[in-house]
Image 1: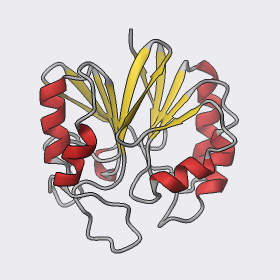
Image 2: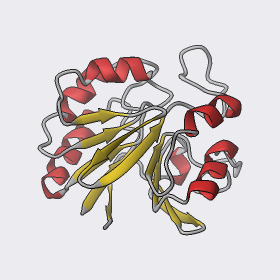
Image 3: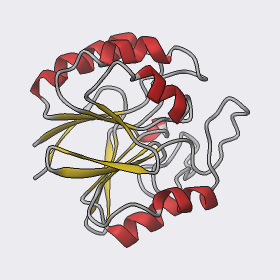
Image 4: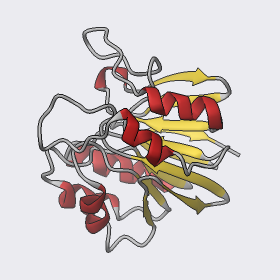
Amino acid sequence: MKLLLFSDLHCDQDAARALVELAKQADVIVGAGDFAIKRKGLADTIEILQTVDCPAILVPGNGESVEELTQACRDWPQAHVLHGTSARVAGFVFFGIGGGIPTTPFGDWSYDFSEEEAVALLKPMAAGSILVTHSPPWNCVDIDGSGTHRGSQSIRQAIEAKQPPLVVCGHVHDSWEQTDHIGDATVINAGPRGVWHPIG
């Protein structure tokens, strides 16, 4: 199965259209959050993406809430919006958690969660699920332009405990399109251009 992974479109309609074209070769597309900018422009981005023919797994970023993303996808029957929840698609279980983790310094508009809140949201994840997060795990595809690790300890602990075969994330722009591993888990910070990953 061919997965097309992406994140952080931030209202870039040209990037969204390019992903729609790429998705003609995909079995499932996986969007790891930040479709909007500061809670604005979400509907326009989703309107483009929903023209893809295959199923979509989506989590909110810190630029939109799960409620806003769910509402924007109401006319997209093949979209599965996940946040502390899972879905079985094409024979695989996907588990998703969105938002900025840990809490970002960006202010009230940012859809953020503490590490403690994230532990509770991650608890229902079954072992072996494909994990889709907006924020990367700590010390893995999470280095920003200043060389600082910006990932989540709770996400890393969940990966170490549950060993998903694949983790898809975004959020830290300076680590886009980078791949690393935590145990047997392949961790990909996707970015807006799209990354192919076969599975199964």
